[in-house]
Amino acid sequence: MQRRHPPDGDLQALLDHELGPVRRLRLRLHLRRCARCAGRYEEIARANADAARLLSWIGLTVDTAEAWARFQVLSGRRAGRPTIPLIARLVVPAVAGAVAVASYMAWPRPYPAADLSPADLLEWIGEAVNDIVLDLCCADYDGGGLPDDGLLTLNGPGEVVKLVVVYEDLDKNRAFSAGDLVRYVSTRPTR
Amino acid sequence: MGIRRLFERHYPAVVRFLYRRLGDRDQAEELAQEAFTRLLDKRLRRPTAWLYTVAANLARDAARGEAVRARRLQVLAGELADAAEPSPEQELMREETSQRVRAALLSLSERDRLLLLLREEGLSYREIADVIGISPTSVGPLLTRAQRRFVRLYHDATTETRDAASASS
Image 1: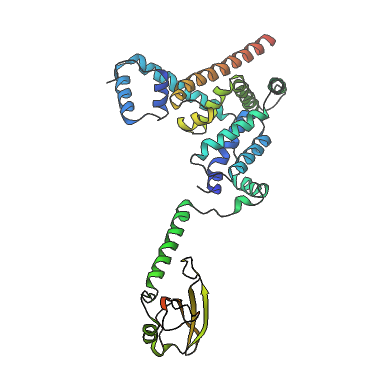
Image 2 (image 1 turned 180 degrees about the vertical axis):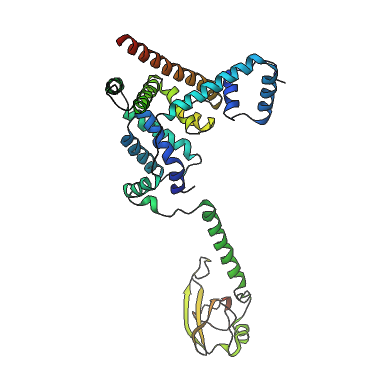
């Protein structure tokens, strides 16, 4: 219950729909019981209406379409540029990220190359690969900090590059050989 | 909200706000365009309050100085006198009334004037508080006083004009 008489500011806020539901209800109950405050409220409402009526004498109408066209010219057409809504700015990278992850997951997985020997590799690729096109050794292809890795590109029927392999030149002969270890195979080759 | 939607929603109100503040339509449109141009590169949580803050600052700069204010009042007085020329009665009354309203508005303090004009354009108490730099809880009481002063100033001006008219006749 409203115990004291509300100040003008509260009555004004009530009039302007700026009070929360509880205060609004309390004030309305008070106004029902207090003739003096109801009179003050009426007086404030009258001043409010009078001020609005007076200001309407110096109102004007504005042609927004014409103003927008002028604004585009004045702002060097920057205003005409389509803006990307916030939701799109958030959703597009998220979707792109999800697609990238899904694509990565769906891509034929590299052979679990750890401990794969060159002999295992040759068995695995079978006849899908004809020959080694390039054997580059040695550099730090795996980021391990040592220039002890080699890079193979292998071709197959109808394809210049069928497979890419990164190996570790364990036997230090600076070429892909039986004593090396395959670290990475780009994909399972198919005929 | 995109700049176009903001423009369509607020441009007429900002122009009206500036026009009521300055009394010059061309200047009001020019300053409103300037305010929206400044808004272009901003990403704001409350663009409405920002827009009116810029508009109010532009208007204040435009109307700065007692000389400017005095000159405007002189012009208004001249326009009131000119309005006495024979013309259709309704048009004359309309012109006189709008001049008196403008004079009453100009007689208010800057803060009272802003309170009235911003509220008239439908800004919330929070937005008004942001523009003027006061607490939202102060808006209600200050607005009540500003409205009363404004209405009283207008009625005083009307009474003076009526008295002057009856004295001269």
